[in-house]
Image 1: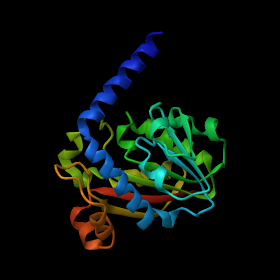
Image 2: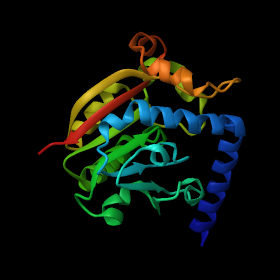
Image 3: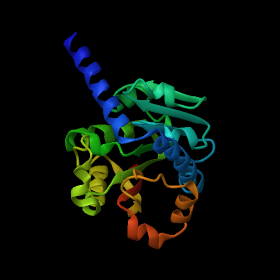
Length: 230
């Protein structure tokens, strides 16, 4: 009984935290940014006939806009059901329980955006990565979008719920320990946060994605694609 009460209390605190962090205008702008990011870049990693799992789906920006045969959102937050678009399959669960939810070798692509920095420890990160490896089919991929603490520096701690700092090297090491082989790694990809006084228009992201020098200048988040070792 106490644990349920604690979880409810934590959910309310997180709801208040995110309400304070992002305005309604910022949330709407982020939806447009995800549409551009999926259409202009991330779609190259996702075959049209793929089964895709968004691990820690949060606002569902990725899973709502990526094109795939089967789209799955997994997050402990029950409000994800309200955010998921029609046709998205939703599971409210701990992301480490993915094998129990979806079964082994059931997913072609797993996507994890800005989730691992919220985990409490390296041991928990390895537990989650192992669960993701279990659900991926042979030749499947994990796509990771993650703050790079080497580039963000002290700004990493600007957000109350950030607990696990990782560089692109630390992230690749964790992947190797969990049984993955890195296919590609961009230490600098997206800016650290989309939060700003003036929401960024979608066309600016499209231009940014087309200009690698801009990514080297402003990129503070890594992008890593990896596959399970055979």
